[in-house]
Amino acid sequence: MQRTNETWVKDLAQRSDSALAELRELLLRNLRSGLSDRPRADDSFLEDCAQESLLRVLDKLEQFDSRSQFVTWATAIAIRVALGQLRRSRWKDVSLSDLVPATDLPSRDRTADEWAPDALMQRRDLLDALNTSIHRDLTDRQRTALLAELKGMPQDEIAEQLGSNRNALYKLTHDARKKLKERLEAAGFTAEDLIASSAQ
Image 1: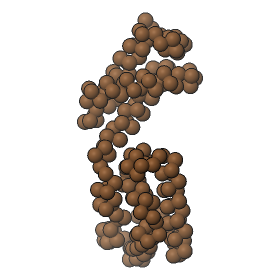
Image 2 (image 1 turned 90 degrees about the vertical axis):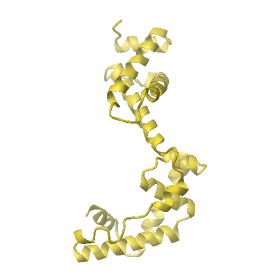
Image 3 (image 1 turned 135 degrees about the vertical axis):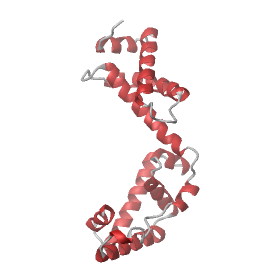
Image 4 (image 1 turned 45 degrees about the vertical axis):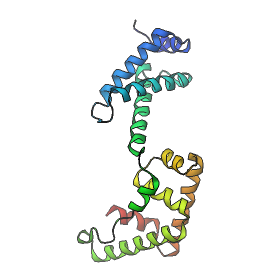
């Protein structure tokens, strides 16, 4: 049966077994195709993602506005679910205590040959001020959260390992960034200096 956008929504709203089974198969096929180059996206992983995606689609059914094909919309949800799961699985066995000590700002001299002498000196001064402020002015939790975030750990994983939630983590890292900005400005650096330093 060829379903239109309207019949998809109607049948799924009524929890039609045939519509649920068909959508699950379509999502699974589209996930296999879209994530074929991902090594951790095996059949078991994709099956789980298709099932979770089906539940998400049902939860968001009222948000579908027919600007695209229903299956395209549902597939976009499934891809987001799968990519989120892959991102989280990458960090599953990484603890903050392992990550943060290994995380550091770029070495002051790592790219010395690529910089003009005056730019190199300003970059060194900026990194010194930033390192000093991170270790002196931030609380342990702020430092841990900010450095883990800079390393690429997802916020949900950081929050979970800190025994917190996403909103509290946002406030924690926002306050940390604000404090660093104030300290750098007090040391004579501007936001433009930081952008120029990281862009070169």
